[in-house]
Image (tube, rainbow, N blue to C red):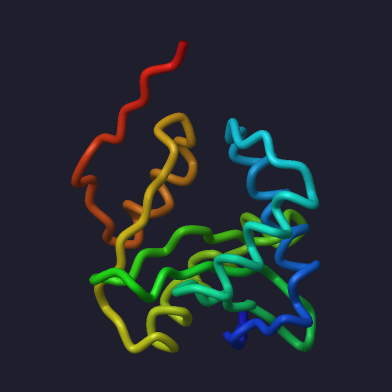
Length: 139
């Protein structure tokens, strides 16, 4: 049985958050060109602003993280990541409701990349509904 704990990340977790964010970008095949130092600076700015990061742990082992924008209503879940070696074992399905309860919220907004079918299916299975399509003109 999965027994996750959600804790608010601190400045001491910055390097861990950056590494997990780098893996997220890689895994979802995002076109973000930032290097590790740029990701670190961006994460630092997020955390100094209206964003808060949360770690998912089980028996002291980090299983993933979430980055939440607290300046939006409803709250905006910008990043949600389960570590590679913990995927397809129910950790994502356990982490999300644990996070929502920790935040005391039953409404959250997310963005999912249109080509990430597994993520789209995952979020739909948790009750999320598609509300808009974000489009971009590329040269």
